[in-house]
Image (cartoon, rainbow, N blue to C red):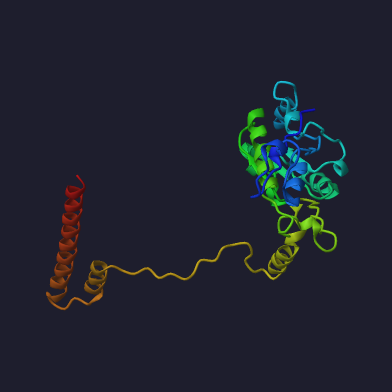
Amino acid sequence: MAELNLNDLHDTEFPLPDGLQGTFAITSLSKIYNWSRRNSMWPMLFGLACCAIEMIGTAASRFDLSRFGMEVMRASPRQSDLMIVSGTVTKKMIVPIVRLYNQMPEPKYVLAMGACASGGGPFKEGYNVVSGIDKYLPVDVYIPGCPPTPQALLYGLIALQHKIDGQSLANKDDVPWYGVGPSEPTPIPILGPDIIDPRQMDLIRRQAELIAKGLPHGVRELPPFQLKKSAPKKALATATTTESGGGGGIERDAAALEIIKRKRLEALARKKAREAVTA
């Protein structure tokens, strides 16, 4: 075990004499609390797809995950505080994933490893694939890649440690698990003909009522818009709809066509002038 360096904990404006720097440390409760948690993260041991192979390689001797205090991967969610979602999340698998997340004790964190866990990846349009684990669980760190390398996973774990360092016991938003009463569990999705999020039951119920009444549902309604007719077309319509009496109707048609021709020549001249300026 590496020797403890108290200078890492010393975080105050009060200086220490040189002779006591290796013996004492003046710090805050949040600092020592976060320092102990960031160096003892226990990931949950489960994998979903090819990203899990990279996660296993990260725990091997070449990359040595134990340098960060995260080598103790637990097979039980009740002994884990970090969920690494490594791979494609299908609609059938999201149900046990959310159930495992609810069984993890607070504080707990979620790390989305790879493009599939972050947003669906190359299988995003698949009928059986969830487009991102963040649709059901709060994600703390996203790791891009398909699959990410072990170095990318290590960088994501270091980013998670930086996030833990910024948390404060004085801010209840940073440590909601110390609030009054137990925290609400994440609703477990319902797997039927399709995956159903219980948090969207009101929306689903309203759409079902619209379907039963034969009204449109789930369709974006555009605001009414009236197309403005241009002046040449209006002049042409006025000229052609009038009854021709003698030679007056023919003269009006010729006048309307002359207006259209003049407008087109003016537009062409403006276009050539713009092209000359840009050139």
